[in-house]
Length: 435
Image 1 (spheres, helix red, strand yellow):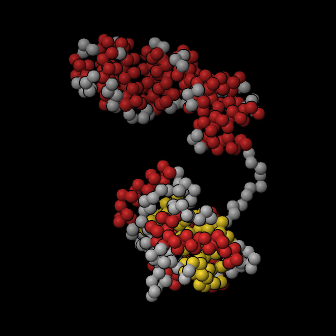
Image 2 (cartoon, rainbow, N blue to C red):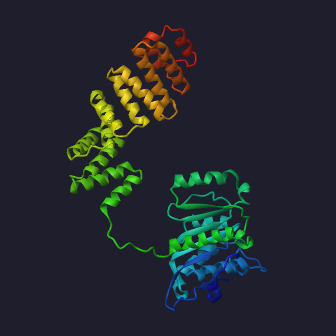
């Protein structure tokens, strides 16, 4: 390896311990390990098999890697494998560790694995198979092909891609992160910039050494006990954690339980109203916001939230002062301006609605048919109501450009009736799909 520490010279080695038929493992133990102690271990997987002339565990890389792991306090294990029975060999080594590992100082309930290059395919086949050892808690996969099987949601994986390998991995590499997200798999993808295949053996530089350091930290993080805090779990922190987890149903349940014991918590009432709005439970949300108001809360977020509920309930005259107060309090974003504008338009306050729409555009309404497109359409309705046909037609043209092309809306909306005899309106209809 291109990485070494002084303690590797004191590592103890037990060679050729039989584990299956004529196959054996070499066991590297930390210098400070006691006779009756067990430690987590990292198994350096041989998923290609051995030849009569060359055993993988005799290669320098497969001797120095487990030695380095042992120098960092874990047990390192390298293995023989039968090339014609790879999966049997892998099952065999983990069965041996489960049954007899303790007498060699190995905690078979806390195992990590390393697989590199051509070994990754067979190793991954084992890891996602029905016989995978339950004690495997972390897998580092070095510069191998992109796995094609399922992604386990219960196995942390450090997947390391060397820059020199990336071109040949092609589209599957680019798609891997999306697969990880969809599977909610605990993977870390590490791109080894400026490094070639097998860099841990051949790249004598600090870039390679840093990747090795990260691998050691990865194994130790998942295999060694995590220091526990001195404080007792906080129910309030648990509630906030659900809020940041973007799971509104869980947050609603957590806040409901919290408020049973803390009904006078105005902040919790505001948050409860917010999450109930997300769940479209508008009446309950309004009650939570109003309870918060009765407890003295009057922040812009509360006012905006309650105003949005009144808007969704088509109580526009009630929504307008709430949304205005939220804006005056600092919530000058396109969403609040847009809802105020729509409420004003529905309530017949046309000039004020136009002003609010223009401010919403200035605040940055996101592009799209159902955002800027709809806003321009509504702005056109406002302009038409006050007799400003040219500005109305300009707004309609912008609505079409933004993708709002619902022809029925243009042909039937009563607000636009004064425009339908205009030449520009007829020309605009030619830009829309047929009914």
